[in-house]
Image (cartoon, rainbow, N blue to C red; front, side):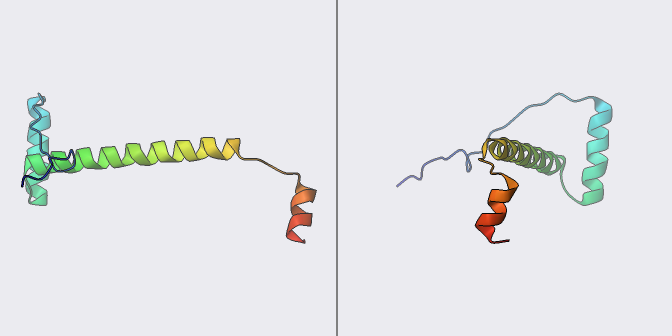
Length: 82
């Protein structure tokens, strides 16, 4: 039986045109790290997506905090028994 091809498992080929100087720099960095240009680009894209997801999560959390109910200081003290 064939397994479903989920987006997380499916690989797609992406073609990108970059300036020669950028490709040379990528190749140098990849060589210094002992990896391939493709692997370096995959890592960079993964990191960018992770940072974007984190920024979005923080932004949504901040919006949620603004929407939370607030109570006066004295009421909070009474409820906490302070």
